[in-house]
Image (cartoon, rainbow, N blue to C red; front, side, top):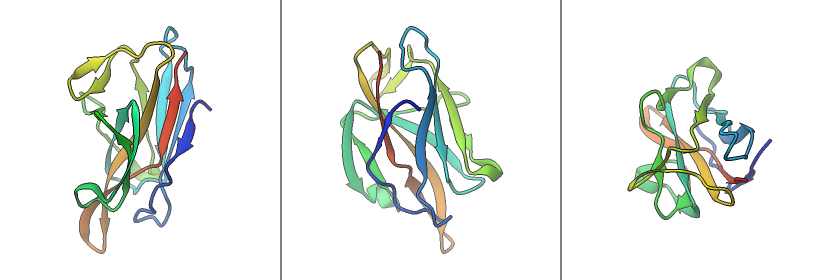
Length: 142
């Protein structure tokens, strides 16, 4: 599977730490790359984040998790990109590598770029709404 996991996730309400993975090709020209997040709380809203920088911020904004990204963080929150983890506790997103979100708009991935990915998920602990994250996934594209 493409990518290297980094930055351990905190356990979520399932008792497990959610994890990132990917499938497909790291070739920019092929443009066939899919992100996957598993071991998420079931029936919870989730979306992927990306940045070219790694970070380590514990409990950002009251979250129960750790943000593993730094710098300018893009959010995959366009049409159809915010997903529900359903009964499986998983979400997947096929990326368009020509349309990578950043705080200043969409940019293309270029060969040689390294991007880091993470998934944010809504969660509840003891009846209190919170959020959590997967671990991070570092991917260098060709």
